[in-house]
Length: 231
Image (cartoon, rainbow, N blue to C red; front, side):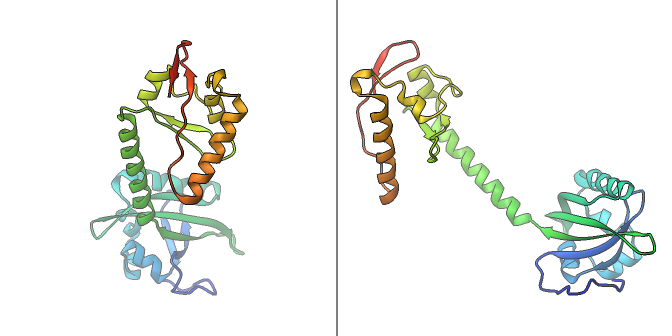
């Protein structure tokens, strides 16, 4: 691709590097791209030189308008380009992040110096984690036992309670704010509030240290409607 590689650029960088000019219609003209850039995009230097639509042509059809709008905005305002979307490389979807910063040249022209990064695996891993979390939530939702999930931070914030818990104790998903709040439901005959919180913290700390289960303890608690139950 055209000469003028930025000094110090190596072919071992995981990100592709480019220097480009963007016209007012959002169409880029590349002054330099690194070998890694070409590899990520599945293009050749000759294609970029001879075909101005080489890069727009591989942007996923559903993402193309956004890609073009981002480059038009950058060209008109002289602002950075920040875009994440899909390319179609050898008929495969490749998720990329493109970031470029404008650099005013001595002769008055503005060039954008930037990078392209393949984030396909990161996106796939994120999707797998989200799918796994959704499956786990469905399992917890349908258990016949009351389930509450709380953070292990000092505030012990409740982040989930299943429908069985809500039916059993009468509290909706947004009414139980923390474990301390839960402890306020403990019946006075089972000891003061502070004792319950101390017991909970010690039990969780012990379980974490040995990667084991928490100990059991019988509590008398009050439903929202005032009915007393043992749990």
